[in-house]
Length: 248
Ligand code: PGA
Image 1 (cartoon, protein in one colour):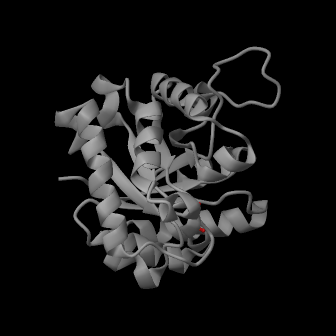
Image 2 (cartoon, helix red, strand yellow):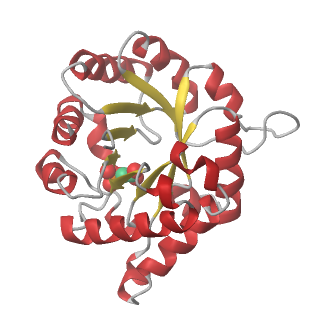
Image 3 (cartoon, rainbow, N blue to C red):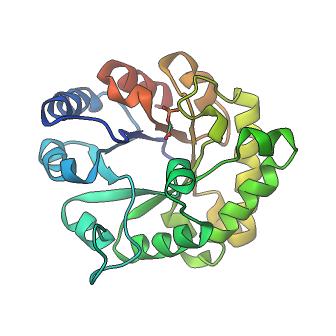
């Protein structure tokens, strides 16, 4: 039985004041939910949010990390540093990193290994663009992304979380229907089974892309949807907690 996980991807948002209120608000309601809850602020807010999450059942995650552990890599943050500051999770290969910062499958693959080496749980994002879906290539694109990132991980596959985020649904208000999402999630589990049959059933596959309190229950009731990666709605305590409750 997979325990549901809901992660808030705060993206490039928040001030010291607003993150205090947001993180404390989530902590105060999180004991009511039976799901793993993760908050992912920007790097410079991690330490502060880590303090707020201490002794709570809410975990800390980063939105990205370097593939490198140390050295002459100006502007980077290593997975070991994230682990030391209290992170347990790191989002990798988000479509915004792929499209806006030219992250390639190969980069994601190296980062996944570095994150695992540091003891972090990578939340590996995959998903097709609208054009790719309309051309009938959605499954091929997702399979290629998955195999590039996770294909050689057979003995560590169970340590990873996958997030399916159709690019056309991110921040657009368009959501995949529960049926569309379930079809892709079942396909993803099948691809993971090619990497490790036994571990594929253990991997949590999150759905992301305009999840809101109104559509969360229908999405999370699907057999292969094990929670969500939440952008916009994670910036409001009540919306985010309603989504967490829908996953429980
Ligand atoms: P959204 O973002 O919920 O605002 O669509 C999801 C994500 O990018 O992880």
